[in-house]
Image (cartoon, rainbow, N blue to C red; front, side, top):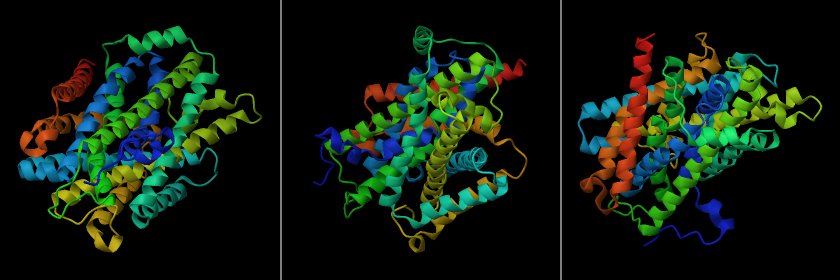
Amino acid sequence: MPVKKPVKKPKKLLKYLGPGVITGAADDDPSGIATYTQTGAQFGYGQLWTVLAMLPLMVAIQEACARIGAVTGHGLAAVIKANYSKKVLYASVSLVVIANTINIGADIGAVAAAAQLIIPVNFVVLTLGFTALILVLEIFTSYRVYSRILKWLALTLLAYPITVFIISQPWWTIFTATFLPHMELNFAFFFIITGILGTTISPYMFFWQASEEVEEEKAQHLIGPNGKPRVGIVFIRNLRIDNFIGMAFSEFATWSIIVVAATVLHHNGITNVATAADAAKALEPLVRTFPYSGFLAKLIFATGIIGLGLLGIPVLSGSAAYALSEAFNLKQGLNRKLKRAHGFYGVITIATVIGLMINFIGINPIKALVFTAVFNGVAAVPLIFLIAKIARNRKIMGKNRSGWLSNIVVWITFIVMFASAIAMFYTLGLG
């Protein structure tokens, strides 16, 4: 039985990292960076505890999605279609497509705004240029080449962890804030909390990782003649290793961004991040000893946003394309050429272009990222409910259905996301 071989040497580890690491890195897309930066600027270290609290939730829900894809050989939308009514299917697909399209628009705007910090080019020209580049990479490169590009782009997140450890930090305060929850009963606090949850545990990640596990199986020729995946214990184990490393890397980057923003911005009286230049100030300590440190900070920030935008936007459009293609029986997959999957690549193109158009209705690109994260936080709630039911279903998952621990943590994730959304709307109602 052809399965993934166990990891024997650290130097071979990269070979075994795939959908989990790509999904984890894509999670810290421009929307994530903007939301975490705003969190640190507005509340200092007050919401740092959410990072530690979210890690097991994020690992559990993404592992469930990855396992669903690997065991069934189908993406999440196809599994929902086979086991639930059309109303449930269309509602689920609509949620992810709407959320992703809005997110694409916000990310494209943020990439262009970040690029303007170092390139004196018109905003419209930049948005059009980056949109064209992203579409070319996603449509005309093979899955193997494209997945390697995505893995390397994940390295752009390292600017924030480096900054954390080169500046003077109140480490005891940070340690305490990381482990002891702090709550404020007001709309602003729960709005950002919902945004943090939404940009960390996002609908697009559910659909993307499930579908990419199927892509991995196809690339390794693990799909049998009957359409059933030939996966064993080792494959599932490596899937979990990949998933855990990806989510842990993502959350460490999240923690670093909040700490940097709190130390550099909040402590210097900057509590509202309204522009890309405001967000770039968080990285100034990284290059303070160099000439033109302000420009270098903007350069590093812009490189990170552009790199993660090139990573995140294709993931957003790709997950929407997988969902719609599976729902309407279209040929799909990044392993297919354009001429063999017109519908799939058509969805990618349309979602990206509609997202592009959002930037021309006068919305501040940085603020749009935070609102997008909040929308994701609300949209994820019903999808997590479905994932919990599917992952535990013996008929669908067989011997690989969720164990008691995974099941409990996934349901806790649902409760936390639901409670956060309710608290946000409740405090909004209170004014």
